[in-house]
Length: 93
Image (cartoon, rainbow, N blue to C red; front, side, top):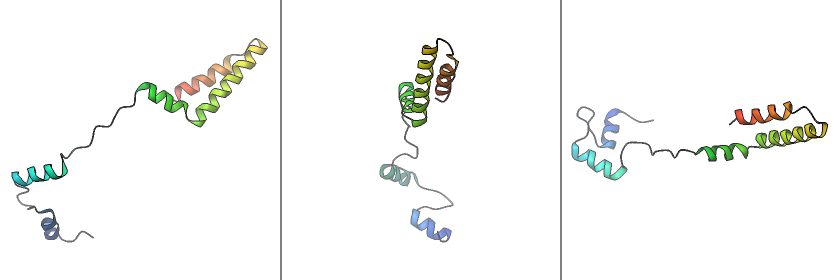
């Protein structure tokens, strides 16, 4: 449990009425850094695609599409299954 407000005020070395002094702010900034989150690195489109293609479900669907296209070539028609499977993989990105 945190305790009462006086204990918290003493531990944080501040005054709830007046806040921190300018020198306390500078001291805490030097000690802890600025009060902001680190900028998150953006994933490039290539990285997103490669990450998605490493997923087991995507691999299974790609193999199924290859098999569907192979069978369509052997039979001479029916490319729809392969196209639909690849569309699902692309939409899933």
